[in-house]
Image (tube, rainbow, N blue to C red; front, side):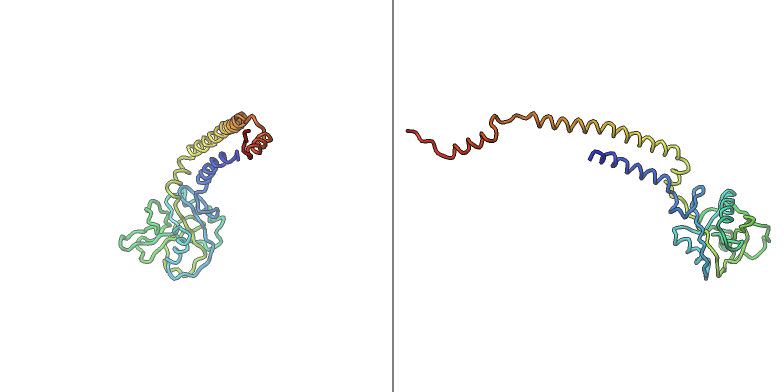
Length: 232
């Protein structure tokens, strides 16, 4: 099977190419920067904010966290195209009374906010954050929700994949191109070598010394030797 060797070399190459493209868990997710997002359009009754969060953790993700203006704009633009629920959607943020500060449920740092003008002296116990999909601003609201029309989830791209897709696209492309080139060159060298090796084997086999007797002679000699020689 002369194609077996090139095929064996191409399998790792195809796996490398697939790994370079498939950063998110599946095609239902949307990639932006270093994260993947999914919008679960499922209305559910909940008893606590943890029930909403479980919708995301069941998909290997967490509730949405936002860390810059670009990400906020991306989510807002995507929601305008896909969201069919209310004007406000729950973010993965809660007020921690121990530290007297807002925190993300995925434990990421608070590096960005987009609050509307609200009274800073308000009671923030059991307070969560909501994204207003028409303005992109954040609003404070009660965490005691009993019904949600959908859940916004986010998961980070694994470390190796993240840097492969964001910082090393050119290097990855060069590696793949070089692998293809080496595979082709290997096939070009391998096929003539294989052909030469097969022809050499045939030549050696055909030039082997042969018996001076043909099959009939050997048979006759064998028959004559069946009887003892008698001397007079």
